[in-house]
Length: 395
Image 1 (cartoon, one colour):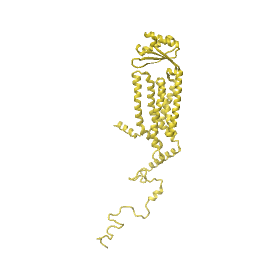
Image 2 (cartoon, rainbow, N blue to C red):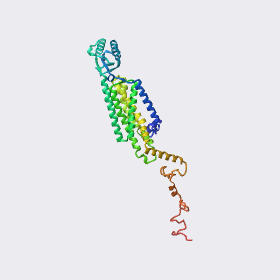
Image 3 (tube, rainbow, N blue to C red):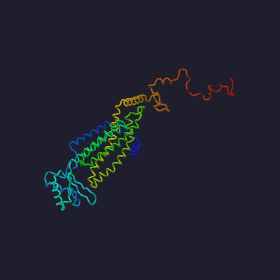
Image 4 (spheres, rainbow, N blue to C red):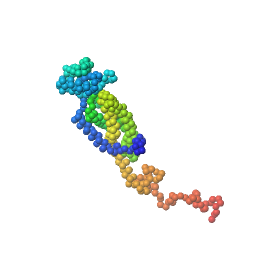
């Protein structure tokens, strides 16, 4: 029942989770994770595919046996040629009926590549023409990287312009900071896991930016709705209104993330893990990690950073001080007859202690008749028995 109650409060935005109030905790956690990611970049580095590092690929028909047998045959051929070349990755590629094993190796010369293909063909009793191979230059990977970085810069600039026009520059800073943190953490996990970086990985990184931006805009739209005209009343600080917006949009963001993660998880864990579709694991991992991190960064980083920036604005600072001062005054007046609200009034409608002129005007004048109930028989200012009513006795 307790779990059902919490779920119901989450859906109504009434869970009261203090996300903004604990922003120092979230900033510390994000900083620690970013530091771990940077250290991973420096010491573990990335496992670059042949598209980025350069190398050769050897394709052997899957009919020769298992993937391990094909990899062992290529390793033996590379060792016979010398030069220290080795198999970097091995995977099964292709559809039903035309499957083949692809072994990616270090950089080989044309003579070495032909010798390796001949040795592998002889080992499995195949014609040399059945063993494929190609050489990939790292220059192609450099071009992909340059185009990806250029696309990232253009995307961030367009995001900044859109958010400034749609919201304000502080929201733009919070959103872009969340996007950058999303990229850093996703890349850090990718480095720690050791998956090979391929062009599909780069495409995946650019894809998660759009999802992360959508999540941030959903939360910021609710923040803008809750904080519109906030300085006109003294009920909430800016941080409290923003925290309420997070609670109100939390389940929407969570549901969106779960729906997006289910097919990506199927791509990663079932397609790559269960069926061995190696070409899907690099794309599946970056999408899965990036979408999961996007949910947390939009909730625990973007909005708290926005509140931190807004609290530096003099207008918001003055408003927050008024709210806190009003609450302190109400707390000091609790339990006294003067500050207690009447049954027909709310606490906001009662006379404040700091308005003595209104209090004096409300006090009764000296000599005035008390405002009590008239006698039951009173009418037109005369008491019962003293009037000239018909049938009444005269004295």
